[in-house]
Image 1 (tube, rainbow, N blue to C red):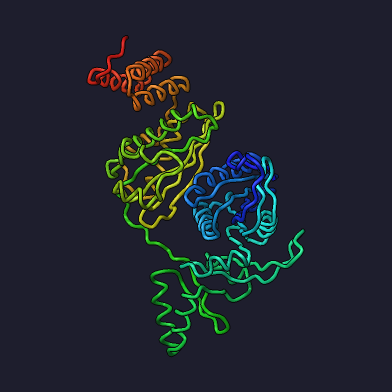
Image 2 (cartoon, rainbow, N blue to C red):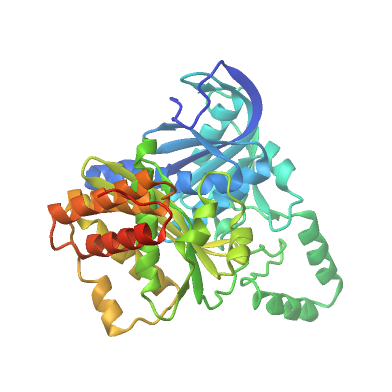
Length: 445
């Protein structure tokens, strides 16, 4: 498997790592029916990985077709990342994922990733039903005592090109795990204690206790032969009245495109700020979190005093712009929504309106008729004028010298020259001239 640009590219390095292999369920059939839809699903899979992996200290190290290989320093980080991925894809049938995880010895070289960890993870993934996560017995031993983790044994499996049977488990994260596995779940130590204590009481009392537990988590199905299957906790969606758009990552492969990703961050922030029922954190407050090493999302949200955050990435290739955005409930650190959008450059404003509208609907914010009309107007823009405008805004936002203010004014005037009807460019130029007048710098015109 070829390594991705995120993988180490120095001398060969051998290390123990948690390896996660993920691929798209039904990808071959989708490609057969609709090649464009298949390619879109594959790209969305990559974009989602790049957006989520940094939160769990993971990195994308290789890909093949619809499959992707990711590396982590610990098993629990790999498992939590896998759960976040499945949560983010939700009920999107085009993005249902199989995920397999193993901890093993891995050799990273300049253009390959080899070793026991890679081979076994790539075999285990084939055992995972769509939307599910399978882990090896070695991973299970590392995560079994972590709160909220439980799994069902699938027994010993003979995997292709593996000279010994491997114990495989499926994570108990969905109501139909018992049906899929056909075996009683193996519970964490804490859950065993809870169930054991309930069994001491009378059957009627146990039933009452279990029913009461379902009101806070998920429904529990009682079996005379096996313990009740633990269900994922459903975090009640609280009211979201405030939001912050974190700086979108530049995935264009060109550091000189930072102005473009920063510009789209600003425009999405501005779009959301037009919603009167929503408090949106300003650009100046969020730009301190630009980069790969920002704090965990709940910590950022607490510092900004917001209920939710939007994060994601931007990639521009030729006339195409792809934005991957995800909405996170900050206190619960839970993904509420995620989607990838790809449009022509002329439709980038309409794309941002579409993202803002989707976020508004997800958090149940009531829009005025005027706001609804604006977000569905299908705005277009001259790509060259918009590009010059974003460059001008970028220079203005980082204006720390006479030269940068001058560049901002030049780019904004260029945007107006290209499209005399481009209202945003006039507003930007007014801001730049006002900044020049109040600044210690005096750009020469």
